[in-house]
Image (cartoon, rainbow, N blue to C red; front, side, top):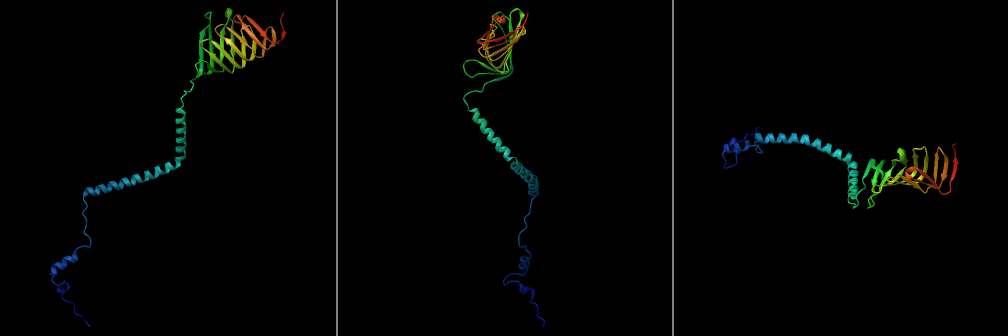
Amino acid sequence: MTLPFPPRDALAAPGIERGAATRRTMLPSRARVQVSAGAMMRRRVAVRLAKLLLPLGALALLSAIALWPEIDGAADRGRMAFRRATQTEAEAMRISGARYQGVDEQNRPYNLTADSAVQQQDQSGLIDLTNPRADILLTNGAWMLLESREGEYDRPKNLLDLQGNVTLWHDNGTTMKTEAAHIDIHAGEAKSDSATAAQGPFGTIESEGFRLLERGQVMIFTGRSHAVLEGK
């Protein structure tokens, strides 16, 4: 059986013209948005920036994770340094390869050197020396050399205290060893109350101390002494 199609005019709603109904059916379900050239350019720039910045951000994040222990350690060190900086006392000034020169009471030169020198922070003005070495010119052009592991130098008074393996060489061939000695550089004299061992052209002497007077011309061994003399 064949059903007759309704006339085309019957598809339209009552009271609506056929042309209006046709135009309504041809309208799209969503209106198209017209995009300008400027918007397209901005969108392209944003996409390019995103492609560039996203990898950089990921790399920065991975680097921060990898370096975080070092950053944290540096922060701790910075805090420690800050606490040290708040101390009220200034650190002592250290001089490497220190050298002091001057003249004695008879205008003869002397020379004092050390691996390092540190001035004490009190008002005494004393200087702590490491491996000091003193060259002193004596009477008639003779000289005396002293050295030790440690020393304390009173520069205004030209006094030198030596401690630890103190060794004295005299121009006449005498060598003396002791553990502590006090030297008056200005007067060219030295003394010690520690056990002393001396050796020279005269032989060997062991004593409880010594005195070097008259700019090295007189040598006195103090305390209980034992001597083995040699010579003509």
